[in-house]
Image (tube, rainbow, N blue to C red; front, side, top):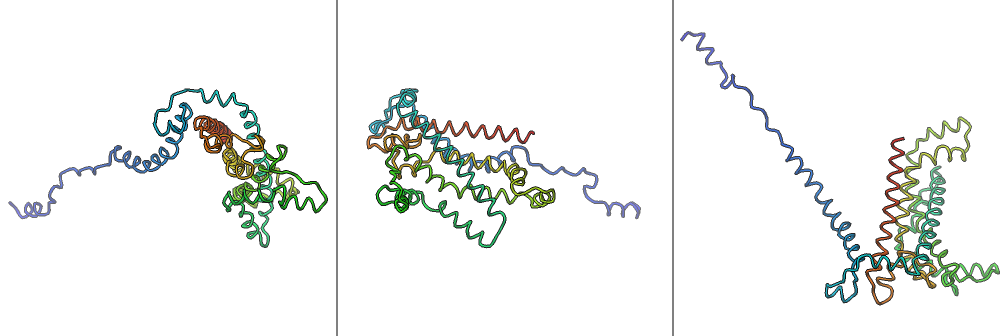
Length: 320
C-alpha cells in the first residue's frame, strides 16, 4: 500500500458513505393524545356541571317524583304528562306574561341606563373612577341583602319610600302587597341590581372605539348626539348584543329577589316561571319536583332559543 493510499484510508470518516438516518417524527396519534389530555378537564367539567344536571332535570320531568319516590327510587314514568299539566294550569299564562314583562322591562332599562352612564364616564373627569366604583356597589352586595333592603324601603307601613311620599302629601302605596304594584316593585329592584353589569361591559366596549373617529366627526361638524347615533351606537353593537343576551339569561332565572320581596304574590301577581318552578319544588312544604323540573326545562328552552338567535345574527354580521 502506498503512502497516498494509507493517508486516504486514515482520513476516511467511518460510515461516510452511509445515508443519514431520518429523524423519527411524532405520529398523528401522539398529537391527538396530547389534545385529548388538554381537553379532558374541560369535558369532565361540562359533563359534571352541565350535561348531568340537564339530563337529571329531564329525567325529573318525565317521572312522577315525590319525596317517597326519591327515597325508594321507584318513580313512575309519566312521559309528557307533567308538561301537559303545567301548560294547562291556570298559573301558566300569568307566569309567562309576568316573565315577559319582568324580563323585557328590566333589560331595556338596565341597558339604557347602563349605556348612558358608560357614555357619561367615557369623557373622563375628576373623581370619575371613584363614582364608577360606587356604581358597582349594588353588584357586589349579596342578593339577599339587596332584596331585603328594597323590601324594607318599599314596606307599606314604615318604608322610606312611603315616608317620602307622605312628606309631600301623597297617598300611601302598597308596593309589595297590591297586585297592581307588586310586579313593578320587584322589576325596579332588579333594574337597580343589573345596571352595574351593563355599565362595566358597555364602558369596556367604549374603550375600544378609537378617539380619532370622534375627532374626525367633530371636524366634520357632528355634535354629541350625532356622534352617538353614527359612531358610538353602531360600533358598540357587538358588545351590546352579548350584554343583552347575558342580561336576558340572568333575568329569566331570577328567583331570590322576587322571593324575598313578594314570594311571587300577592296571589300570582309577581309570579314568574322561575318563581313558579321554585315554589313547586321548595316553597309549599309539599315538594312536587316533576312539575318544577318541567317549568325549569321550559326556561332552559327559552334561553337556548335566544342564544341560537344571537349566534345567527352574529354570523350574518360577520358574513356581511
